Image (cartoon, rainbow, N blue to C red; front, side, top):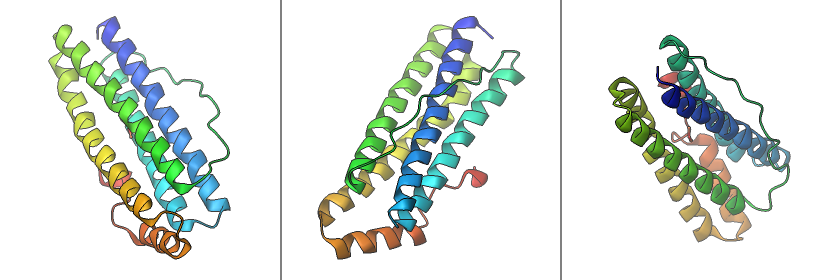
Length: 169
Ligand code: FEO
């Protein structure tokens, strides 16, 4: 594996690991606020990001590279509102998408078509994750500060089939 590709993949490993940690912090905050549906959704999302990271780790090692397990920064502890959480989540996912697109570019420049093929899975995944975050944000903006609406939103997320399921991928 070319050095430039290995570095780009290792950078992506760090991004996925940070996403997992970030969503874990959000999940924990939601749980302490009694928002059990939101917490469940975010815990699952955190697991999904860990799965994204693991998939990269295994790919790098299987292709003769060395996957680097990174140190992570502490994510925020407090969040103001649910809208605030999902805005941060969408913003974060958009950064991840940019990073995946950059990885695709590097694969093409280096003519590494195997890695390019592998990365396509992440391209589709980002499309879905951004769409999901936007749908949730739209709902929250519609609800505003209506407590009854927020209660129903949280209950919907708890029963929702939209929750990410890493084992199914
Ligand atoms: Fe793995 Fe949500 O990016």
